[in-house]
View 1 (tube, rainbow, N blue to C red):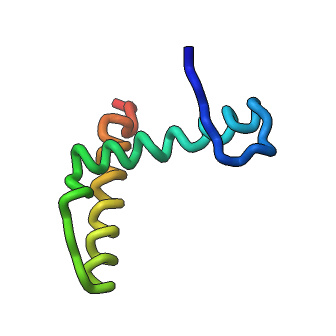
View 2: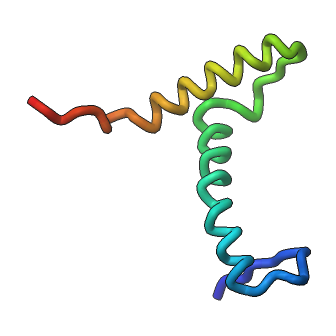
View 3: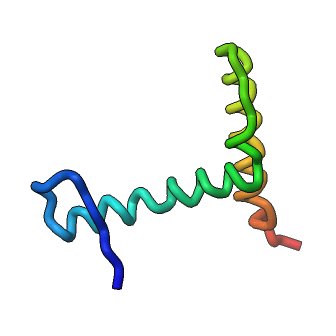
Length: 74
């Protein structure tokens, strides 16, 4: 049995499930980023440092996503 909760009482069960299923990919990405890229332990204070870190994080994420998915032409 699974339960999906929402504080928005006007939503139907189907709408809640639809929103949850769309959100799931985002949640798994952040979990992966926290575990494998140490996103939860890195602290920066300036806007420039945040921009640099996010750029590096996005690049590392893309490398992880596309690893092994390149062209298979030989």
